[in-house]
Image 1 (tube, rainbow, N blue to C red):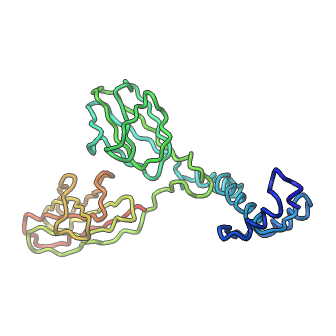
Image 2 (image 1 turned 90 degrees about the horizontal axis):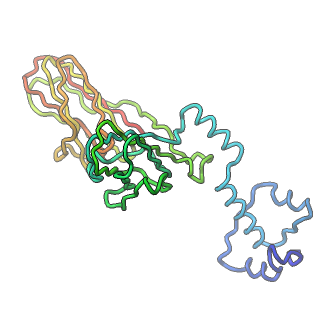
Length: 297
């Protein structure tokens, strides 16, 4: 009985009270667990409260420690390149970085838990803000590595150091679920889709369909200019599925007749919807202009 072990589980009467309490959550243990413990005679599981406590303990152990099968799976995934537990950024220090502009921002490929900073220049004038421009700056001179969760970071450098740079290592291997498939996965490319195709016979400005990027990390556009005149392509973004009031991003890309080009917006230009605007200055006489898009999940 449990009252034989006063330091472990409490009295039988206390266990009965806990078992009758409406707050107790019934958790069914793995098959064979009760038989295995009972056959040893070391424990005598007789009430629901003890069964609940034991199951909760097993659940905690399972969530916080590696099991052999999952460790093997992660080893294979790491060696095959399906999982990337770290990412490296090289940030030039040739000019001052303000810690708020897009030039100061870097976007990781997934949730990271540790940021470590190295440099061949002076680190005293460098600070890091995680996730937000409004975050408190962390000085790697005093805190390095930085063991906090983040998806992006901003670099501030108050001194221009020509020819010098920061090497920033971002890692997610401190995730307590490492070994259970919760690590950042390799980006998966989707199938290309045609978002615009037309045999144009007039000059003008033409818009592709917008690509839904809410569930993806990146998008690439391939413009095939089969017209007998040159065109100019530029990426556009919007919060809604509309090209009418979309914003222009990056720089226009000229594409000669019977040529093609690929446009991949930078991480910092991500928006829920993205597309391409096409400018045709001369009147085409023949050919087809088409645009394909492919996303990375």
